[in-house]
Each structure stands twice: as C-alpha cells, then as structure tokens.
Image 1 (tube, rainbow over the protein chains, first blue to last red):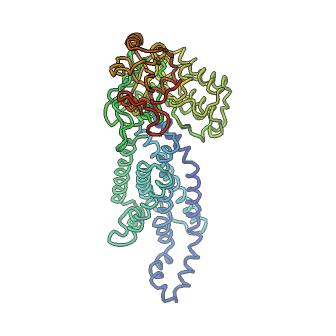
Image 2: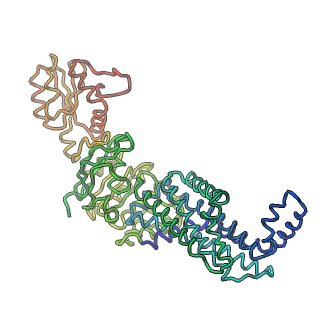
Image 3: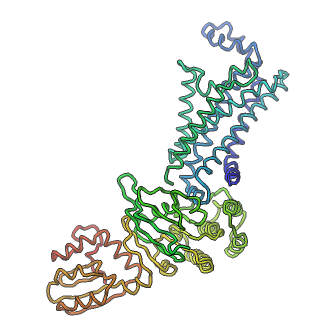
Length: 254
Length: 326
C-alpha cells in the first residue's frame, strides 16, 4: 500500500525534482571551472583598500581548490538549493491536495493518514537525495574535467548532513502545509522560515551552529569522515518537526 | 449483516460558534437508498464527511458498517464508496492511471466491471482527467467507487453540473449496480425529482438537525395539506393537534400541514363550524418546502396564528409560512 502511494507521490514531484536536479547539476558543474576566475578576482581586489576584509575572508579559498569547492558547494550553494526546493516541493504537498479537493478522494480510500503523510515524506526525501547527490556528482565530474580532481569519498562525506538538513526543511515545509490551507502561502511561509534560519545561522552567537551550519559539516573537511553530532542533531530536528506535521495533519478536518 | 448500515448518536459538529450538525440521530437501513435532503447549510455535507472520517465530530459518534469512522477510519473506508460534491480526481492522471491506482488500494477490485462500464459509457482511457467533461469525470468517479463493490455508497450532490442525459446514465449505472448487489446508498442532493425516482427513504435536515426521516411511500401517503374555511374563529387547540406540523392562516381560512393521523385531524377540524374542507396531496418538493420553511418561520407563523394575526409578510423578507400557496 505504501509503495502505491509513494509511487503516486514520486510521480507528482518528478517535474519539480528534474528542474531542481538540473539547477543543482548546473551550479555544481560550474564551480570547478570558475575557480581560476575566482582566483583572478581575488588578485584584482588585492589593492583595493575597502575590499580588504572580503579578501581576507576568501583568500584561503583562492589558495586551495578543495577548500574553495567544499566551502561554496556544501557551505552555500547546495544547502540553499535544497532549502528552496524543499519549500517549493513540500509547501503545496498537503495544502494543495486540500485546496484542490483531491484529499476527499485519497483520504476516503482504505489508507491511513499516517501512510499518506509518510509516502509524501518519502517522496520528498527521495527528491532531496537525488538533487543533493546529482549536483555533487556533477561537481566531481566537472572538477575531474577541469584537471583538478578531488577524492570522491572525501568529497561525498557531507552528503548525509546535506540530506538530513534537507529533511529538516522538508519537515518544516510539511508543517506549514498541514497548518495552512493555501499552497502558495504555505510555500512562502516555509521559505520565510528558512530565510530566518539562514540569517540566524550567519550572525550572532549561534553563527554556524544551526541547520545551515551543521549541513556544511566543516569538521569532516579535515577529518575526511562525517561528524556524527550534527547528523544526530539534524535527524532529531527532522523527526521532531516531521512528527509535529504528522500530528497536525492527522488532527485537521478535510 | 447489521440492520443499519449507518447510525449516528447525538452527532454534533461545531466550527467556532457555528453549529453545523446538532445532535444528529440518523439511522440508515442496510440495503436502502436514502436521500439526505435539506437547504444549503443544513449540515448534509458535514454529516457525510463525519461518516467518512474526513471531519471529526465535536461530540457524539457515528457507526458505518459497524465501525466508528474516528477510531477505525481505514475499516470504514475499505467498505464505502464516496463521490464528493466537488471534483476531486487527480487531473494529471488518465482514466487508466486512476483506475489502476484505485485497484491497488482496494483488496477486492472487479476489473471486469471496470472494463464493462468504461466501454458502455464510452469513456476515453488514455485522456487526462482534467481534459474530460464534467459528466465524464463523474461517471469515471462512479466506476472507481463501485468497482470494489462497496457495502455503502455515499454520494454528495452527485448530479451537480450534469446534464439530463448524463444524469440518466449516472442513475442507470447506479441502479444497475445497487439492484444486483443490494448495497446501501446515501445520496445528499437538492434535486428532489431525482430523489423521488431512486430513493426509498428520505431524511430531511435543517439547521443541523434531522427534522424528518421517512420512507417515500409513507410521505406520499401521510403528508397532506388540509385547507379549511371556518365560520367562526378557530379554537387554539386545533393548531397543536397530534399530527399537525404547521398551520398557515388568513383570517378564518387555514391550511393545516399534516404529517400523520390525517383522519383524526380532519375529524377534529370538522367539529368546528366550517364552509369547506379540501385535502391536498403533497409531493416531495412540497414536503421539503414545508419542513425547510417551517424550520425558519414556522414558530413565527404558528405564533401569529395563535394570536389571531394573519401572519402575512410582516417582516418583509420574502416568502414564509404565512404565505398561502394554492
């Protein structure tokens, strides 16, 4: 039964997933060839006094291709793609079905609401994994083709953190989708909450310690293996928020 | 099998301060075709959604094929078919996709039945549902809901937007299936002339309450209007006779709406000096209007009647029980 529902959900998200995969692959593949341009830009701003602080921040990346690739891909591009995609994908998942009336069809079939929710969650998780791994593979291939090969296993180490971070945003978006009837409003609310988290993660005392920071997995850059602490925290957040979304979905009238 | 396919016990649903369904005690006999009728906002759709487990009751409970839709929704849903008021099929699927999807969700699925009805109704299998006409969508939905041979079929305004030809096809397909398998059918609708064709029992709801539940034959036999012109002011006790559910009065001319004990009521009325007595049969629409309007204005009309007022258009808000319809 779950498989039937899962395949139906996967079919419904496939277009968004393909578009997000193309974007992810394009961004991932464009990073290695842009390294040389990045280096030249840093050299060009060396003499500009007001750009000194910016130069100091990224100088290390300009000197080290692996650091550049890691920082940009896992620290910025991929988490942002995943977060926006999770909101666009999951925002309408429940609210859209409620608004279009299809829940009256689906929820009167012999399936439990928990099964319906979990099938949607599984389809969303699959899509997040596909765009995360697909974009990363594109970055690896592009690095190889650019003559700057990196260790594949080392570079794939933060995948678990990226996907678990994606599940946190998926859970959050599903929570909004369960609470709000309009799918666009639910999506916008999920994006808003993600942006707020992103801002909180980049300034102040919790800088780098929230979801985006944990997704970057900076410790495994030097260790070469995933750090279990952020993985556990991300998994716990995804599970708790996801459970809250399920509880709201099960309780609400259709 | 239980005597009743559907039962509700003081079923109540409130949305904020609005009571949509108010202490509903409904009994639908197994194998019957019951029409749930009532004006807009009577609580029909909310009642149906509570029976399906889509909406949770504020208080009271329901029993559908022996199961509580709140506690065991999947068991209820495996034994029912449901066509909602609004279009609810997945527009991106084709008819074949939808039927395949449904077949995997139901443990008993009659593929031969599907093939027979698809070809009989000439439905395109590979066209996206969003490209089908309203009539085709409804027919497809009916096939999808009948193909697992549910014990109970619940239809919420199924004829909405259907032209007379599609309505006839729909009813024929429905009656064919029900005739063969003896399923219980609950239809919420406004189209009373269709109800008279297919239903054997009518449940009338108004303002969230069940105001009448009767077999159609009984309605036809018992629901009457007695028009009488008295020679003197009619005594008060006539208005509260057992069986009298409403009275319209214009001076000494009165119209009594009688739902039971017709002979006793007429005998009692005849005891008062009068010019003429006329007994008028009511069709379902008349009964519906009587009960629906009675719910809104009946007290007013009766009170006016008792005080000797004529009760005609005093509040200027349209037709009501004070209007004498010929």
